[in-house]
Length: 224
Image 1 (cartoon, one colour):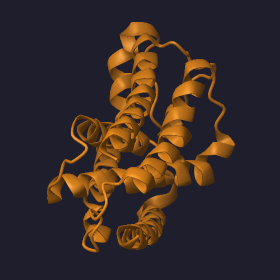
Image 2: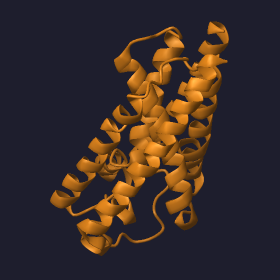
Image 3: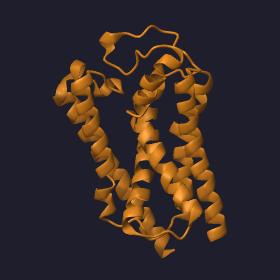
Image 4: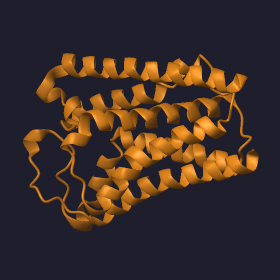
């Protein structure tokens, strides 16, 4: 099993790194320039200069997306497992489980809230497919097949939210300072804190349901 697990972990890690890497190279070299003028009144990320002059701004903005956080965490934890499929430890297990939850929520939320309004082109389409669909589905499948088993404890249904809640807090603080947001539904300037915080709370509740499902599947898989 360890040999097959090592291969699966490696493929999973490669997909996550590929999606993240393509997105960053595209940002740095402005490989897919925007065809629409940036509207400052939208309070959305963007507005960086074209070409290499705007590379730092585009890369910084890209790391304000939940998608990027989840793909990086999956890439790091799956790389660690590819190097050592028998890796153990509660902190690592919680990071692995957090990555699993975050990448799942990335796929679900993108599909439900953003996919209908997006039309990625060229290299953006490639990174979008990898980060929002291929890597999430691969991560779920690899976890189900290769585990590691017995590592998703009930307490993890709570601890997996430490990083996501940190992300949400960062998004609100950064938005309050810079007046820009990564997603339209997080735009406090347009919708107000009550609406945005209610949405965030709903996302956390939905995420907890997903965490409970993973915990239940883990219990069944461990007994099998």
